[in-house]
Length: 87
Image (cartoon, rainbow, N blue to C red):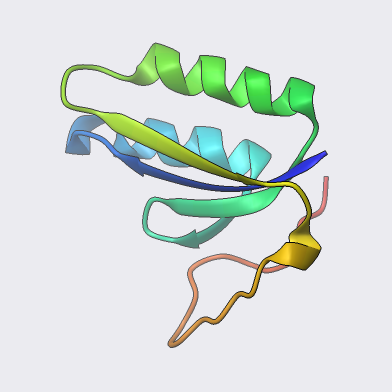
């Protein structure tokens, strides 16, 4: 398992598709920002699905933390997503 922070910057036409995809795997934190814990298989599946949606000048960045304990999360203002995740 790895704790991930993921961000994307895509053309407005693909924002909805990316949002749906990333919300299947991670918790929505802010516009185009997600976080959560995934297995290696889940991470690879997300990477492949996201890559298939990308077109010219689109981008996705994943930050992989080995363990959630090593992150210090400070949030100001209202958050977009629900902090808990039920599968």
